[in-house]
Image 1 (cartoon, rainbow, N blue to C red):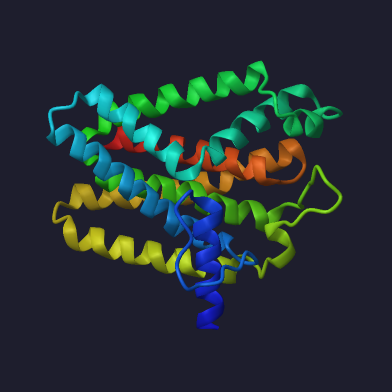
Image 2 (cartoon, one colour):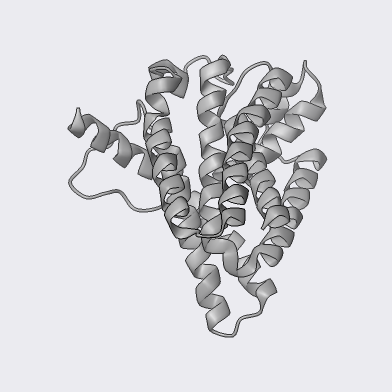
Length: 254
């Protein structure tokens, strides 16, 4: 069982990032979705330290924010942003042309607009959060990827091709697939309860966690109902929309 989990972790490492293959481990891709939220937290931590490093070396807040976001695209290969653009092109193409528009390698006007809109919001949020980024960005990226577990659980897989492999094919149910993430968030909560002596900060962070659960469930539900299922592009769109929404909520409350 332990060896199986390690192989799936190696598979998720390859699938969700552009990092090199882990040595001496043969990757598996059957149940990798369960590892996406912690990997998101890890990616967010790297991006945060890039931002902090640049700020501590006299880079402007604007340049630091832009490079922070660019590093995320580099680490993920732009996988989720591509899904966001394709999904919005599909939604506004109408029901009959939806899958064709999502499959098309060309980006439409609605896809471009979604990218610009989301990027501007993320930049604005980073400028507001600034030095709090190390506490904010990792958990926002965690919630973005956690939303996919709700997505896969509730909706059927819609494919462009007759023969394609889906997370749904090897899905073991939400309880089992989300167990790792639930343990992770419990540890995160415990750490924050020990770190924040101020009752006001404890209340704010508890509220943000509840909002994270709500947003992680609501956005994929809206997308799934709109496109009548899920696929890789829709999962990418869910990740970006959820993490952006959570960035915005943290910017307001913090």
